[in-house]
Length: 542
Image (tube, rainbow, N blue to C red; front, side):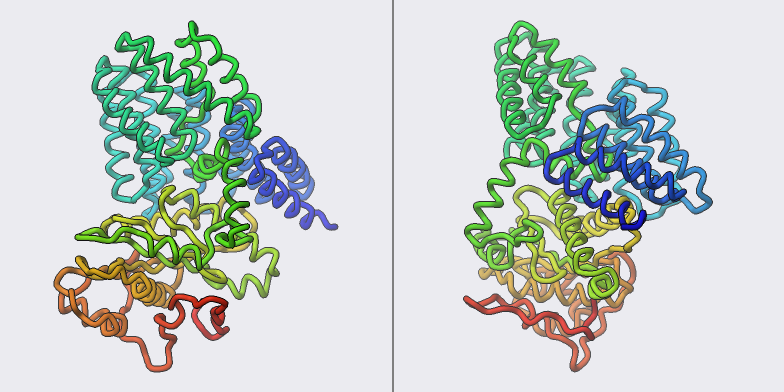
């Protein structure tokens, strides 16, 4: 095996090890890849290995000191390359800032945030990273005791995250705003806001680390209120959570938390230890989002996936719901009054060419990677499925046009960022189509099949706009009773009549479908028992 092939194999083994909850084995593979990259004299290979090593040490092994040299070497390589700044460069500085914050190296963290901000000023479409930079500024102000400035920055980040549909970042900002109230002597206000975040975390929103943060902060708040008994209750819940984590093989940091939680008289020490030990960077890096989806929940996820596979409910490659199970769950969604669901079709751009040029193993790895990003970026109660071939489906219940369109951009941008971080030389982007279900408000029938067909019509527009794009159709009350076939055939006419709203991440043509073009309503009709869908032909847009 040649050196290049060996490097690619090591990087792939590292990704698999991390997914399986074996971070130390992943780090060992990345170290081997780094040595090979140095021998080859390849900055790209070295940078890829260094970034992955830095994130693994900082955010998975909870070893920010061990991550520091990797961050520094990666930044040095980026600064030595003559090219325009990229979004992942800003993400690298923000990841390093998060690691420095964990060690309370505040001045150094501020330098990294400033560098990220300079990069982001030159990037027009990086609001996701921009919100993380603003949030990190808020955390710096909080750690420095400048509470008014912390409240201002975190509030700004929260507003931007809500506009983007970044639920995980939004919830983290809410928690840190409550922390500002606590630190500034307003524990009762902090109690109310932290309780809201805990409720979200207990419903599964935000991942296991958010639950740890919320429980820790609830104990801190009750200590500040003088209610040691309630503080001890939350400390006991942390102890139970630590036991679950140890069972899920979360390694030494979680085991140490369990040992410390066994001493009720040392609640204050436990809380301080928890603050140092758990990563508070859900605002900051794409890899952190993936970590939030794993960790403590990994063992439960594996058991759940095995049960679902046995029941024929999941796709065996990606672990997402399969088409049939997704359809069953969509049918079960509650529809009534003005409640609307968002239906998003996500299609990998030029996937056939990737398979032809790189092979089916590379194609499968890309599908697994995209599935992981979708799972991490979506809420726990979203329906996320592999819809067929290179196509995925996301359904978010009870949402608005603005939130649905923001989610589409969030998913598109996140997959593009994850591809840049992967550094495997294969350009991977997606196009998305969005539609409302029921399409018009107040409809008695959910009409999700029609909504999927309209989402596919929007996807067609995004593909013909150059790919790496999203397009959306959203029915308005004025269109109630209109034949959906006419909307699908000529959205521009429906828009002119005031029946629908349309959206996209750039200007697009919504001209009528020409004769002979594929009809979305066939491709997305529900499957009958035993029926299989004919895959797209090579001539169709991919």
